Amino acid sequence: MTRSTPKGIMSRIGAALLALSIIVVGEGIWAAEVNVRPDSPGTYTVLRGDTLWDIAGQFLEEPWMWPQVWQINPQIENPDLIYPGDVIELVYGANGDPVLRLGRSANGAANAVDSNGIRTVKLSPRVRREAILSPVPAIPLDRISSYLSDNTVVDPDTFENAPYLLGEREGRTLADRGSEVYARGQWTDGVITYDIVRPGRELMDPDSGEVLGLEAISVGRATISRYNGTEALMNINSMSQEIRIGDRLIPRNGIQLDSSFMPVPPAFAVDAAIVAIGSGKSIGGVYDTIILNAGSNDGIQVGHLLTIQEPPVMVEDEFGETSNWVKTRQILGLDESHKVEFPGENIATVLVYRVLDGASLGIVLKSDDAIRLNDRLVTP
Image 1 (spheres, helix red, strand yellow):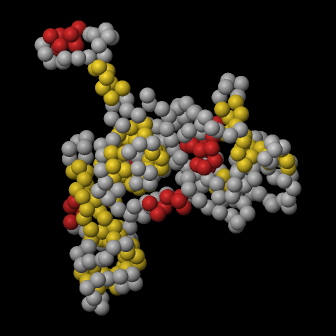
Image 2 (spheres, helix red, strand yellow):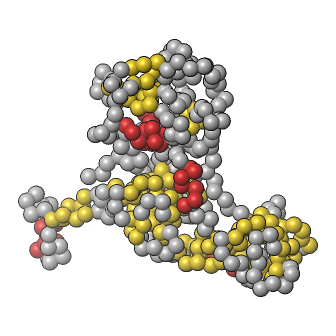
């Protein structure tokens, strides 16, 4: 029932060339079987603006498995870099395993195939290509960045004792972008930029039954311009909601994804639960943020990929051999049937983009079905 499931970042060099860096992934991750899409093309010509995720998704069911099937071409200059116009070919090795390889002509331009299937060589002025060129991203961060939440999870006591806003310097009721505001509290050494937050839901860990933390809803960002002890004057840098007296201030916890990340599954088994979906949803889907009850204390890192798995299915078996223990329970009326547990289907792929001690935030990159609270997150 369970299948392999799936993941860098956008950076451009001018308008003409993009490069792709294939990052070597740690040992022990690539145990899953590579599944080629039924509608996979034989070749694909790289387009300007493509990402590794886009390209791999043309061929593979799980785009994050690209490094497992990528064949380095030693005869090609910079074979680990891919440019617009290059042709990616899908072939099969002697053992039947799929292989993706790069086709590029001697003059540095890729071989192309026209609508009649005739392979041609594009003749154009050569541009010197160096490994220093910025890589094409593994994932389309520019497409998903607007969906990444600035909300976070904090300990209730930490929230209660956080610095707070006292008022707008000019005496106005509401502060807006560019306003100066008074604030007071115990400031974190070396930190001048703070998220302005207010309390959201108290999040419960479905596994332990304990309070996982308090959702801190971001409403803006402010920077200390000067302070004296516990009193500070701050500038409002940005705001997503109206800013009120009493709103709390916590050290800035921005998006931690950057161009050095090649998202991969954890190299260990994960079994976590969805604690929250979006801003109070009970059902979610693609590009929704989820909160899970595993964090850095559990080895989770920014850039990890996880699979959402539906609950296991219990199926009654009236024909298979029943153990003496089960027969005894049936006689005593403790167990009326013999049921077999089948693992739930893998229905979605999640990219972790913020990690806290005991919790993490991830964005749903792909979903084949509705996502629900308490669904499990596992290693693909």
